[in-house]
Image (cartoon, rainbow, N blue to C red; front, side, top):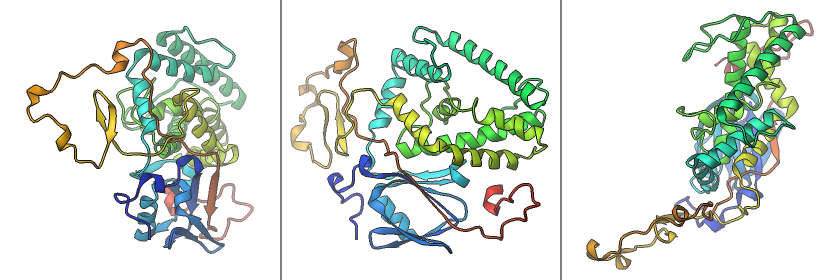
Length: 371
């Protein structure tokens, strides 16, 4: 039996870089068999070594035992409860052995205006390929993005024949205002936020530390989702409206199918890592738990430091400023690998009901899809 996480040595755990990036499970039962997670459905039985999974995504129709969850937690595997094909993020549990390198890097970037601006420019640069945005201000970038979307709205309106009268959105109730097209846009965007949220949490980054957006618990989710709206949710909403498919469910199903066909999950993983990981930095360092020190940077955890501390606080010399405060450039970072590999595995059980007849225009959702 695996040691509990508080007894396991970090070096006994598989490095994140050596693990399968993500395993998505749908309409199946998960149990534990020694050190493997067993995925069972009516079609197949799959054994997955728990220590080789970076992120386990539990989709609709899944049941999981306490033993399986405990094994995954002991193995340092992140568990996310998501909608179908990863659309929407409902809850997550983060393995305590995961390194905080990517999170530290994100916090370092967000707290330095120059570095934060560079990441924001990189995000806008992904939307304007071939254009130089290295000198643009945030005000200029916002203006260019607004003009780009105004043009896209007009182009899709002409292409689909659906009139466009402007974006209508009510904060806190995305589906309460606007016409069918606006409501479909809101529904599709909400689903896109879900999959971006799942990826960000799975990588070990913070959903709340945004570079363009700020003040929200999902600011970084909104940043990343904005990279794909022009090619995913915007044309989808116009096409569905033109076909008369105007339910929120239609937007979720449409985006779900699009994500599965284009393998958007892997692309989001790559883009998040490319935006946060500094070029030339080696993240392949052991996962450790340490204590912060204002002079030494870090010291070992799990050690009683009583003999090392001065008995009289007045005897202690005043703390010195961190090295980075004395230099113009960034201080060296001891970053732990918090990324994932490039493999994505899906284990999906058979439909609960017989497939619809050929006359049916769309496939019905399972009960979990309507939640």
